[in-house]
Length: 408
Ligand SMILES: O=C(O)CCC(=O)C(=O)O
Ligand SMILES: [Fe+2]
Image (cartoon, rainbow, N blue to C red; front, side, top):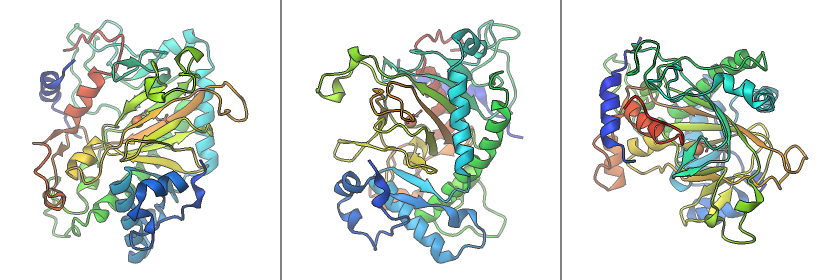
């Protein structure tokens, strides 16, 4: 069982802190077989983000050539967009619907009930850990603006040493509390815990394919490899105790006052979720069918709607993969603008529900640019290296509007 060096991570984080219908695209195109990679921006605008079938990495009997095709498609998608749709993951569509349905039922409850599992700052008498639990409207902040969303965050259970928070007995340190599960709907916890197991397996297959996509070289059977060995299993080893995060989100429509009448969407004074990159390895995003809400920034700065495809995840890579690849693959900016005019399950003006699952490195994984990627990128190493936990803590500290940050 890993023992996280929380004090080191906390002190480093403190010192660094300053306050469409895309179905025209065939699955697994290869860089050679498709001209879309010569004109990636136009290709995405015309036919949407690429669709990648990951089944060859979940099926042990798949052929090496099928795996190679998948790996090439991942490389092209990550070089060009940092985003793609994922199919062939083996989780039944009915199971995905159940996840969205349970989230919607939770958010429909009265506020007093949702507040029973409220997120509190670490170090305080409520026993909060600054991260886990329910966050009401306006509590979450991106880029200094309050997001129009309510959410619950769940994390991998803390299995390092637990320390008393600075506020005395019964208080907690950041991230070291238990997950706060809703009492209602009653079956939510069991269904979500089963989902975490399945989707973690998909995340593992994806990072395995990514190591192959970067041509890091086969892992040797010699028993000498460890987490610092830079072969194609490097991501799998550094995510073998993935400090995953799962977020349940409800976005009520933005009020009319924040809609620029036919103006530039950049001028919004509030977003459903402001422009940001994700923190870790790969995000597997599940959403309800609402169109025109999630937007992905292309390399020319324009924003592309990434509308949901039934049964598929929207996948994007996070900051740690960008750092490991020395920027060959970028952690792409994205944002959510939900105006309520696209219809939700046929209803105008409803809330949009999404459940992103963030498959992340281990809390104490050391993440620095891989030597092969530094060479391939032709640029100096972009980072001296730090643990994923340090990066995560820096983000958690800046995420909450009402935070009193009692554990600094
Ligand atoms: O709800 C979405 O579509 C995206 C949410 C997101 O980007 C995030 O929570 O990091
Ligand atoms: Fe995100």
